[in-house]
Length: 311
Image 1: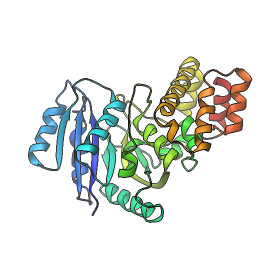
Image 2: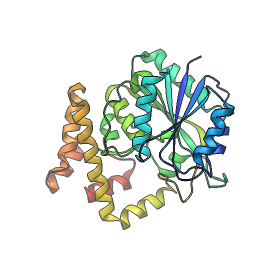
Image 3: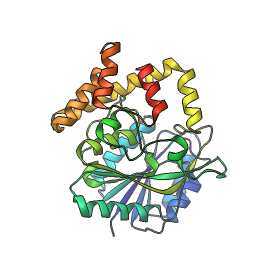
Image 4: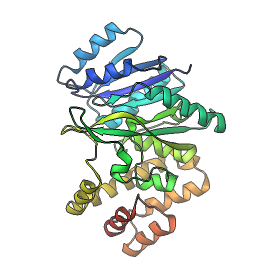
């Protein structure tokens, strides 16, 4: 058996967190620990989790951030801290409002062990899966998050990861070799799952498995979530300046990645990263040439038309 550490970032999750914790504890895989990291909740989240800590000693743990960091930095800061204090073979992110299928951890460990058998445990690896989309009451919406959102999940090279996040963090598993590469963090990081996928695509491998492993709850309080591809395209078309601001933040994220990992990168990936950062200051035609030359493409024709229009 391989030990698994689950990092659950919580903030005012009292409405759903009990259902999520129950689903984790119902897992067919038993060698895991759940670290609930509360980001200064003002509801009854901590009281609910404390009852689980008492009922499941050595299985469920609660820590409280000294200040509100937001979900991205809470996930990454606590992942680094927990990996150093109580290391494991594998690590998983967990949202407070989903429901995990009982075989999720078992399937993820099997996937990881297959990849490590081919590539070696010293290879940084991130694997991720599909998700079943449900509403706030767990009523079925869609069998596949990725088909609904028309994301090309197998095109996950470093150049593609720079421009588009492919991963749902709550379906990922990371091996210890990848987590050891997590160094500094900063506000420039857009999403925790995107950041870890960037590291994995830069120095190791990213692998997708189409089997859905969670009920991915969509509700009004979601920090991140898509209602569908049509909603995505409509949002981007209507909110033009917001789309350009997202691109600027993506360039800032790439700059931080270069500051931390630039000297470690293979030459071809370092060249891609430098070219991507140039998009921030290049002229109108130069930006489009950089995208086409380096194949900084998103998923699908419409997304790329939008990219070339807004960049």
